[in-house]
Image (cartoon, rainbow, N blue to C red; front, side, top):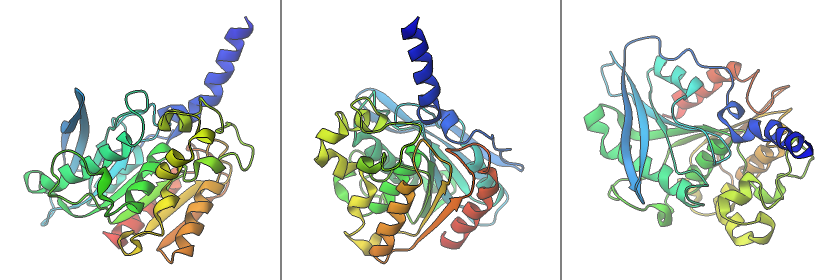
Length: 299
């Protein structure tokens, strides 16, 4: 009985970070006008795994629309492209939206996830004429683990080591980043006590790098977006970083550290702490307009 109670407790604690409910729990209304939707497009294959994306393209414009790529959360071990939620509001504002899957940590450890994200960017650029989108400038937006990945994508513009596979004649660089409450410095996620303890051998972060993060400093350095902000600073795009003040899963200090590191390197970064908001859920729907304005400005 004690084992069952302990298991239920763990599920309740981990669910906000380890499942899609830990991203955005309020569903988007979705596109409200004519949209071309393409489902399950294969953008890469690794060891027999098809990596898929869904693409939403608004109809009716005179020019191909700019593109924003949504990267889902789920602690790098769950989640799906199937519900891009608030990102679909961008379709109503004239943007094309791609929602991507990537290999989860039980399928492959880091850097598989960032390799996949960059492969998706290259594929979209290679196929922009076929799908009538403008991929000359690409924005990326993600929440939680997806926020971490989009922050890492922008920080590693021009970093060729993770450009692996096909479409290598295309750039994987992105031109604007919106990070919603993503981890940025794994060894400081417990600076303030929260609802999760991350400095453990079975934390999502340890599972991502394939070992206890306390015992793998080199792997942690490689996975942290902050590690790259003092290199090739002219290639790093503008960031909009947003975090709930009551987030107990990924503490707000993670976004504060990223913003401060960008400021220290004289990079373009805006930090918004959403008063009273947690790790997704109530309070986030109202922030979509700021994200739309950010992408309209930079794309």
